[in-house]
Image (cartoon, rainbow, N blue to C red):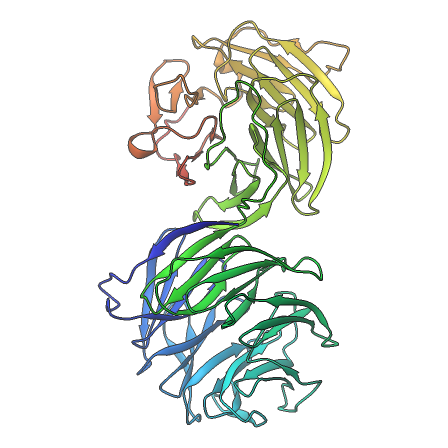
Length: 560
């Protein structure tokens, strides 16, 4: 189930004491907030491993953190008996809430960002007015320390709490106890608010938020369950014990354990999903670990045909969808990720059926990310939004794919192999045209402009065709001449030398003068085979290490 940890965040820093242990975690769209034993709060960007800011206003350890629904504010609860409301960008304290007589073990921010709830070892829950800083209500009902408070992510009027008295209670925003009481010492909502999980040390119950009915039951092998969290897509549940993290698939009423994370050497303090595929944990051992979820060792094994290479754990393909500010990468076991080009942050992750792909390409068509991949004698088309495999094209015989492209607008997809270019309709799967090549093409050398396609051969010769009037019974029209200046906006040409027999790095050349304009170098000289793409400004490349590199070449490319 696991491949991890992806990386660790050690405590070596000039701004936070190396002795400070990370206790509390919260995450919102690529920003991670960490609360430390020292009372400090750090804001981190794991995608770039940059520590953005450190806030130091609590007098002792930070026990709980919660980020507002818009990502602008963060609430914190501390052993110093206070709760605070911060501006996440500047680190400035907007409000400090005084009133508890014991440590504040949990905080939550309402959906409308007007109320902060805090639960304390003094057995009470307090509802604070963010605008005035006043305590609106003090809620009594638990007979022992309150362990968790959690606002519904879809309803600002609904709050749930859990206590060491082993009860989970519901409250409305006016401080009234509402709905049935169930058992548990911890409670958390799913991201859509439709379910919640409550648990004691031995078992976790997933319940319907309206009726309270049990919809799934999770058994934990160590009998020391401390906290549970839903993945953002609601398909997985993560729970931790003293040192280990367990993952369950909860897509049906009979949850199955699908993996265990081990690595922490002391108690796990906090746990949070940053995406459906990334889980973050903090521990009293002084580390913050980022775990990758979704690489299942129990996945069906792809049979390796005679003569085909093994598939390493690496980035297998990358693409740059037309007019979209994203890059897309694909792992050979079907994990597809989208990356924000300007920030490098992973925006979304999808698990697709693309097992052991040869080539992959993505395009945004009618607002949906469509992923196309080829393997052996078939090409598959998958809608990441509906999770539907909506088209499979049988190529007929095994082929040596050299490139795969989707046309602008997403009406067709083109396949380059070592002898031909073929084009199919995305909607119908019908073969729209085919042309035999006059030489050996370079890897990843297929270039599209509407219905026109060009390929670059070994030896730098370029040839093009217009597939606009082609059908399965007619041939594409050859484009006159072979000058790259006939390729609109393509005087510069990207040469992807990532084939196993190539020794040169990937590079960009001026195809009129023959001069080299840019080349990848150093550690990132050799991307995975075929996993590099250039759209005229951005160069994106994927590597065997699992890294994705995005370069903005705007100021490096000479004007035409």
